[in-house]
Amino acid sequence: MIDYISGRLMAASSGKAILETGGFGLSIEMPPVENRALQANVGQEVTIYTKMIIKDEEIYLYGFQSAEERKLFNLLLTVSGFGPRLALSLLGIFSVSELYVAVLEENIAQLCRAHGVGRKAAQRLVFELKEKLPKAMSANEVTAGAVALTGVSVADDITEALCALGYSGPEAAAAVSKVIDRNRDVSREELLKLTLKNMASN
Image (cartoon, rainbow, N blue to C red):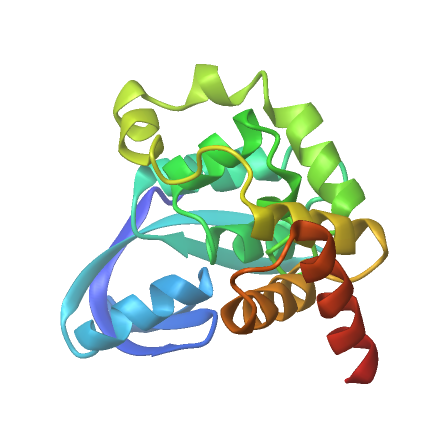
């Protein structure tokens, strides 16, 4: 197993980084948010923690900026129906500690924000990882993210309701955010109605 790779970062685009090491240019798939962070380091020496997966005789290399994030990626792959694409989608939105708290709090609305993660997938993720995560994540990681996601806000509540109606997490979250920005003094029920009306007209 390749634990990590150090080399010169040649490029960092959406979901992918090119790392030159030992005369080879390695294409590494990464969470989109990490590529944006890495763009400032193009041309410099960087270290990327890796996970290699062989599927259908093809070799895929996945990269992360910390060993803890790679550990969480591996845990996500153990969830039924979750492959590398969904795992990267989640890590593109949440830090390790944020995802830890979202799962333990069973915050379905937050988990539905990730592209490709619907309500049923989010529920399965919570069911299969809630017991595993406390054993796998360190106390430092838990403490670092403990304040990030506490409780379910009105926005989360409405997003979860929209996910239940069949809308995708990212679509629902974007619509809710837009409506709340324009209507800050109305009830939850009214916000839901306005969001549904707004989504139906688009």
